[in-house]
Image (tube, rainbow, N blue to C red; front, side, top):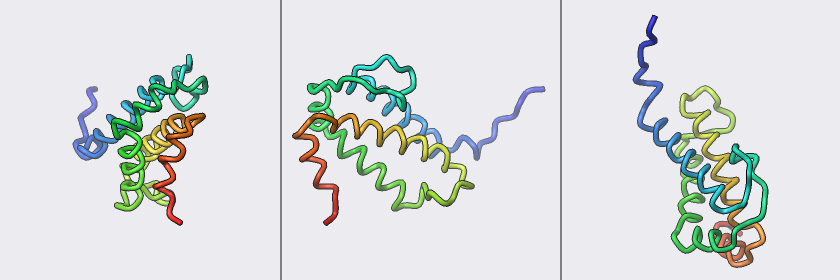
Length: 120
């Protein structure tokens, strides 16, 4: 018996979240020297030149803004796990946050740069 595709389960939003999650996962391996296959388990020595490039090409802003938009536009609500986008949004937020954390680690300029996202 062949499974029939479910158009609602493979919406554009879900595909976009999966794509963004995969790209963020690949970038973790660019920013930090690691042998971990799972980007969420990646721990290692940061690559300062890649951390700088992440800032200079606007990736840090893009990551921070995308996480903010998921919460402010109700694509992801920590208490609402029933939405079909919920698990994909959560997976993206996890990897994007992990990538941001590695982009700041031991990089003073990126740490200072990120302070603009903190509301006083």
